[in-house]
Length: 182
Length: 177
Image (cartoon, rainbow over all chains, first blue to last red; front, side):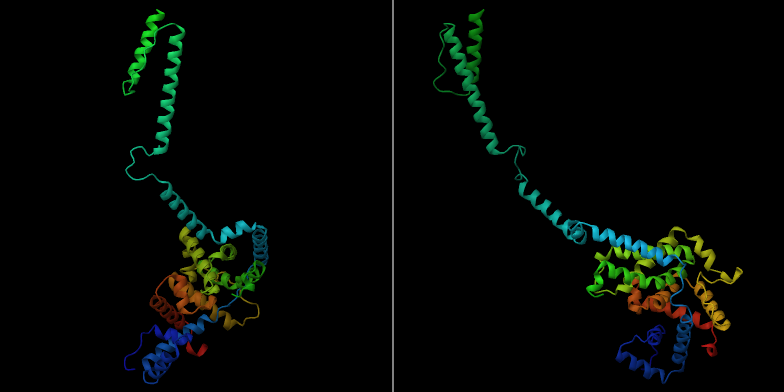
């Protein structure tokens, strides 16, 4: 190696982290480069200085006790949790994704066909409504004829071909009855 | 972590065993022993509560220290002036700063003096540089793991470590080491 490595690489070297191949290259370079040896010595001094610190400094007397107490309470809460809550908590993101997917599929399945003029009513409901209205009109018609016969009024027969004029005919019938009563 | 360590009671023991080192990191990051103790407890409780989010392919220790670093950063962000006045120029205050860490009573005077000088030099580093060295020392983390904890590229982390270590190395003569 002719070129010096990046100075920061000596940090890895001093910490013992380079891979085997790289380690051999760096070692070989150190043998020929005084500047890099000095660089490595400076970094190693820094690591040694850092090592003078206390690795596990003492905490206050009650700190560890308080930590144990709080952790024990957390453990108790966790073990007392119903299994279904624990399961949902563990897989909450999966559950949320499944819920979103389910809602999207349901919306796609139940959504009305594009271009339907009255999305709030289906074709079957329209047929049902028309049938009910027709039956009601027929009942009204039968009732009117019966009342007219009871009153001795000559009831005209409806036109043979029931057309759109049926409503008009019924209105005329009612008007005639009112004339008789008057 | 092994499967057995996944039981809540075992995890409790593991977390307690990490407590002194996490405290060491926190007290040197923020310079307040009382706050560091609170944050250490909060770190452990958060780790316990969010064990479901821990991915076994990562290092458990790195995960714990990442929670601690995030809490320390949040605390400093919320109260930016408090640690700065304590840590930036501790030599101006008498008595000499200890950054909240008690010396063992049997430590000899030279060792105590050297340690104090290191503490002062450490306190004078930029927070980001100091964070890298403390993660290395207290977390015993490889630099690639430190890069994950600090969410910085490995090159940046190494540059920080290089700069910070050279500054620390300058305060202690070679013959003392």
